[in-house]
Amino acid sequence: MYTVVKLFKDKYTGEIILPGSSFICDENERIKDLINRGLIKKTETEAEDGGWKDYLQKYPATIEYLSSCTKKELQAILEDKGIEYNTRQTKAELIKLLKGGD
Image 1 (cartoon, rainbow, N blue to C red):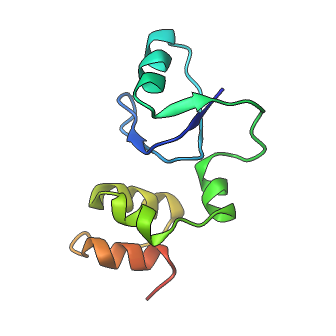
Image 2: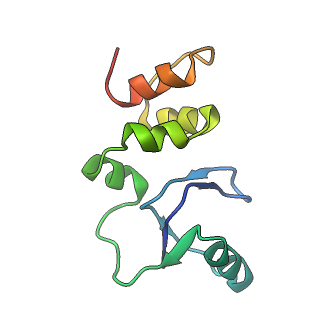
């Protein structure tokens, strides 16, 4: 099992993979590529949580981290969390929603 170190988009599913989540893949070449690109690292111990959603609950994302995300990545996070948003909202407004603002 591997732990995600840097946010990336899964080329097969299109899903945004967030830091702290677990990543499982049986393709050795893909694993090597992701490690070489600094996107994942080998997990030393089995993860206790259920992935990035639990990770974000334990360690809420900082403004700096959210600011580094693209608007589409922020929208994906909002959708996964079940938070409603308008596609016309700005990146700053989406971050405010994620941080619990109005």
